[in-house]
Image 1 (spheres, rainbow, N blue to C red):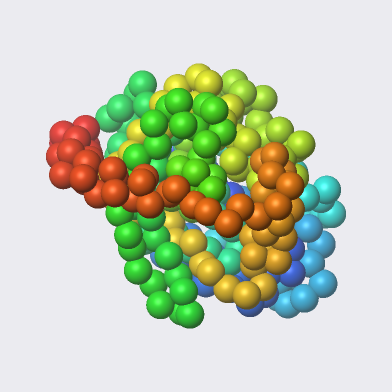
Image 2 (image 1 turned 90 degrees about the vertical axis):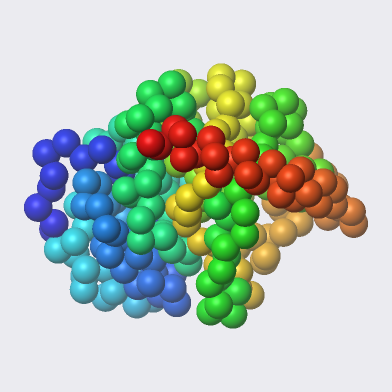
Length: 260
């Protein structure tokens, strides 16, 4: 195991179950961070593929490794958050990756803005092994609070580009498991009842799109988890994209001022 930092500011959590396909890329994106003021927690659900072999290769760079069966990915993430020693949480799934400056930028922002509880950065994507970034999106608090932040309406919040204070997570009581495979959506609703989501102009993570990912295989379950009987044939998230693009200069300037 990695020699632990006495008081890490950031805790990075990765849940994994048979994620051999991209797990090593995920781990490397954590271990290659430009800032080392973090702890890395990896929770494995007793994988039966090559995950164990890959994890053992990097075991000296992982602070806490737990391998035991979980009820779901979100139960695994919750387990990681509960044992996390850092004030700030970044969670990155085992098919996604972090930007190399994620820890530095997230730490810098939260340290200089003590009243901000959670942030959303520039949206990052990986499609067919091509990595690229979009823009940071604006999520008005009333949109989040009323549960409109999904693809049929305003658009989902990209989890890979979010970071939050552990104290906020504990304050809302963690995940509401009634949302099944959309518990991050439910968590954002809970967060928004307490505080706003601060949009920032820097990269945190990249979401990988591939045929075997859970959000594609269980797409119908995702929508049923948030109250739809069928997958909506429409999407109004382009309104979000347009408004966020118009407000992009404001986001850039505000981020600069808040991190100066």
